[in-house]
Image (cartoon, rainbow, N blue to C red; front, side, top):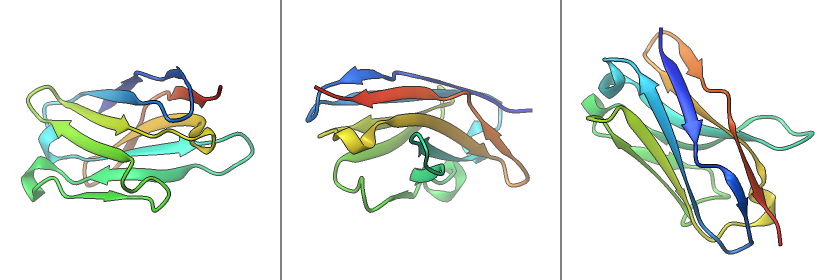
Length: 118
């Protein structure tokens, strides 16, 4: 069983930055693909960024809406994945969820709220 816990959300002004963290309780973290998703009110959950497992080179991919502004990274020694968010926009407001995929199942955190507003 993999447990993931997000942190780092909050209220930020447009143009500001935040860094989200996701700690995973698993000794196989390095073998998990990790992702950040978000869900805004009244909308479906959408993929924001992915980073493949440490065993496959940590390849990253991003939604078009966040390319050039968000950066996903991972620290396998700390079993933690990060999402650095720069140049935040009001449309980035959502609950952000961390996902771990171990090749068989998906595991989700409880989410962390990010609100971009002046």
